[in-house]
Image (cartoon, rainbow, N blue to C red; front, top):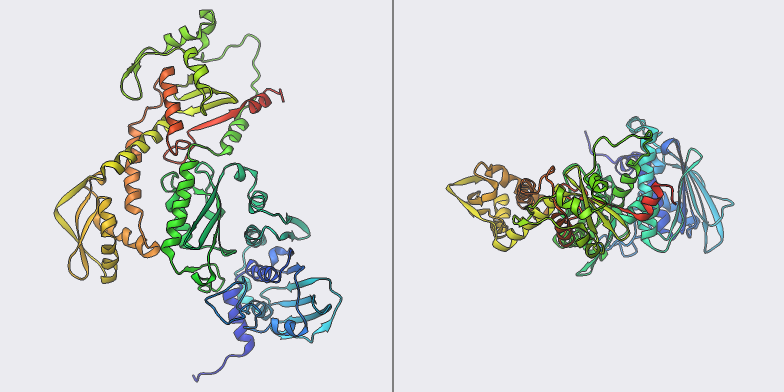
Length: 596
């Protein structure tokens, strides 16, 4: 077979296979063009998930007759004035999106040239262009795409259901809307309005409109800057999570990306406060010089490559961890909302009595003497700290402690939950979950001060590796040694493991550990596996060393636990990411009883 040139139509269809995977891909490219055209309002109208019809209308500056003719040719663009692929300032820049779309569908473009005041129209079908004719069209550009993939029926067979394609379109549009709050967006599907986002001045309002008010109440503001790189946005509290990572919105210079490096940073930052299987909700925006990031490494521009990935990784992780520690005492507002929803009015027949008396049921039999009743219920016992503590009278601590964030303990119910009164409502604390976090943080603090104890191996483990992998591992030998893992070179393609952390025990699979470390170093440039495993062990130790459910506490112990929680970072959630307490305001309580 001799080498030959492919027909232009086939070339465009091949390019379409890379750029336009589904209707959402085409809409992304067309909306990005509208943003680059200076539009302040963009309307998207789709039918059957975008498979039968897509209409994108904007109020941008439009095109003249010559530009319209060139716009649907491959590699014709207005967005690379210096022909510099290392300094890309626009979203769409390759000049192949329109050519690819017109090669596989029927397209009509109407545009108004804002400079000359002229409007023009062109029609295309499977790459064949009609003549450009004058038309009546207001400000901006309107692109109508019909029968997407009709010229490539093989690709059409692999399209998903109408609902799945619609959801992909909506996700694409909301991501673009997050990055550009000053632009109004509207989405119609089968004639029904599905999304309407008016232009706003700040990103927080746009995020609240998309992610909901609960996210605004349960999120932390993120701000950081280092060496010309800026990080901003909002991240959910550890107690505000979802079962999938699709609610993590990451942007680089206004471009929505799904990058492994960035998602790895989020996992590393939340690793110490979230249980496996749940993911935080966040929207982070990275802004840096265009020359420091390559956005041309993926056909759909979904991935990026940073000139200094270690700087990006370090900044994101440190900024998120700082916010988590500063807001670690707080819990998601959804916890209180779910608590309120769980309350129901239970009809009780006249004369009926509760099946199980409360701890303060004896109050009426003691002439209302709460202190005496409390003393009878909680005899002196061993405190949380291990000393013998006398039972305290409730009146002696209530006035003093009620002004604290978690208030003053009033009762313990079901031998696991502490009920405390605050100035503005009440707090319910899970005593085991709370003390588990306190003990865990204490262990970590001790570990950071005294270091990690190492256990030398009688016979060092020799692990054979590829030369490059061994070199990468040895470059991080110093940091690994601080975590208790000592490695040394053993020839050109092997390392020896001299010691391991005592906490990992004697049955540790050193070979598997080293392989996992290398995988993470290759992917992210650094490794948190060893530290995470140590933290998992500390978490397990904390669980076994914490005050157990079913143990009665006296008022002194309950208040001591509350005060420790207020002073300890991350005490708003246990080691598994669940809330350690819920708070109900007086307004919420009055609403339950119909007083509001």
